[in-house]
Image 1 (tube, rainbow, N blue to C red):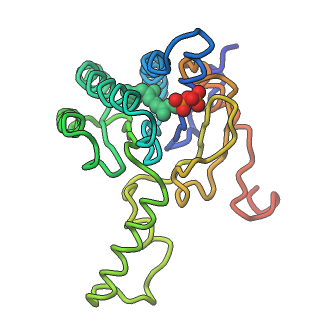
Image 2 (image 1 turned 60 degrees about the vertical axis):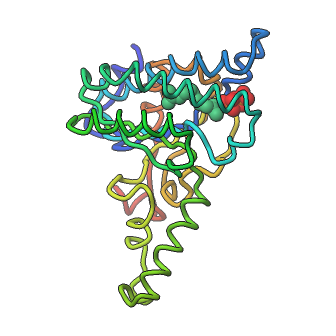
Length: 246
Ligand code: FPP
């Protein structure tokens, strides 16, 4: 039986986050430039988004470009930015056909202006969709986000809009870029690396972690479904004992 058929539709994760890793190694194995890996990574993005939409996962967050990625060679950064523009432009109609809404988190204004404009256009063109939300993390890092959150809360305390006594988990969550998005129950990382790399540090407090050995361009629908089946086989205790949650 394939993995898709083994999924229990009644206990799907509402939010799956993915650290897409291994494009560079995939290209190197083929004696090609890193950009070739990113180009083929777009196919894996398409397959994964389609896979999530087919089983109605509510939110899919993809770590597409980190704050740290700005330090890569300019040629690679430029190629990634134009790949993003090209993909957004090309895929908006497919997103609409599949009722997928696009959103983005990160320091979006730091993106190259063409990328930023194309992104806003795609977000606007898909805002009416009610199915899966595809959330792209772009120029994103968790420490950047947490620093921003602390500054916002500090400003509110300074202006007497908020008392420091009232700061709690919920207030913090509401000042992160993921406001209104439930925390991911499942975090997938490809390429065999087992790190979090500054991604959604607050939000993954109770996420199940799944590491796939596949390099991102090779990650397909069945790999995504395999991760969901694995997730559904886990016991999530949230700090309680096994007996308490039964
Ligand atoms: C990690 O592989 C991948 C990235 C930093 C970029 C991911 C981008 C894409 C898949 C293409 C565009 C995205 C969208 C949403 C259309 P790596 O370069 O770190 O690989 P390595 O670890 O093997 O060097």
